[in-house]
Length: 409
Ligand code: CTP
Image 1 (tube, rainbow, N blue to C red):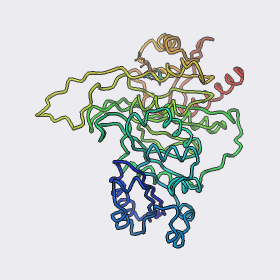
Image 2: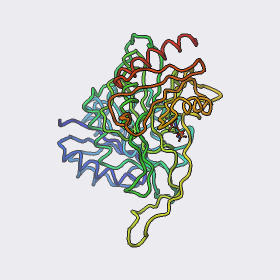
Image 3: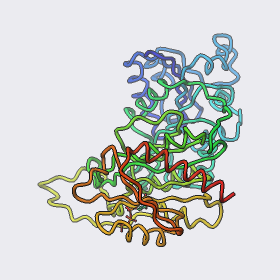
Image 4: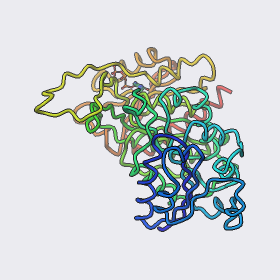
């Protein structure tokens, strides 16, 4: 699957990783043309980029020699995929606003080729509402994102902002290359949820202990992914915020991959507004307070004494939104005993409109299995369904949500 990739390198300490990215992409048979922003030149030299890519490096919008050799616009037209790595806050902002003030921004504006951004910036810059707004706009326009990851940063702070590692960027790029790489123009969908936006969380979360270990749970993501597929089939635009799962992304669904509960909340807030929010993820209740930057060593560090801190409750946060609350907010309850009573308590505690409760106790194969028997709990009462395949549960639930939504509008 050799493809033509246009790599845009913007300024940032992670620019050095772009050299490794070029090398690995070429090893996998892809052709790589590179555009460097002026700021990128402060971190790595065009000479090393040209040597690794085997192509001249482009940087100047008004270079006559470059224009004569290959029209700038042609650079992005000839590409099957554009990767922006590292993607600085500045370039993301320019792209979101449609500015064309330098070559990198011009190419992003002039293309209909799919763009994959690997953001890299200080944690406060990443979490700043302005950056989050820009990311949401680009996603809405069809761009894909990989990372940023959590961890210790070059600036001495800790949190999301580190550029994704090269293998992750390559995996995301090749997944996009397998799909059609041109931005799909919106087509008029039909079905009971046509014109609606549905945001769904799915899968487990991974809460790091150190760079190689994490706390997780047995969720497979099957039910959440089946709901996303059912919502898409019902005509909705679907954003699936998914923890690490071994499932293929449902077709036609925008998948945002995350690892931790905090990332899941951030990605969910970016994905909103929506008509329906469904919290199907098995979110870890706690994260480790202090995750070291190095792997804990058995002999040196001894058994760790982990201090756990409560994670944000994504369902309760969305259900409690004063402005822009989705009209229908649905939660799941995984219980091992007193399933209905606990489900009813959760409905009240979380402030959602409906709880889909299921028994995950000993003897049940719900977590990771193919089928599920659920109790649909709302203020109106409890409806207990027979054991059904998870995709059938998803189809029936989606039909129910569509009716509820219609009643509510
Ligand atoms: N949930 C969430 N964010 C959390 C915890 C849970 O969004 N931090 C959502 C789940 O996606 C699910 C619902 O809340 O829709 C119930 O999750 P569950 O794990 O069953 O409940 P908890 O809140 O963890 O309560 P408990 O541990 O008492 O069962």
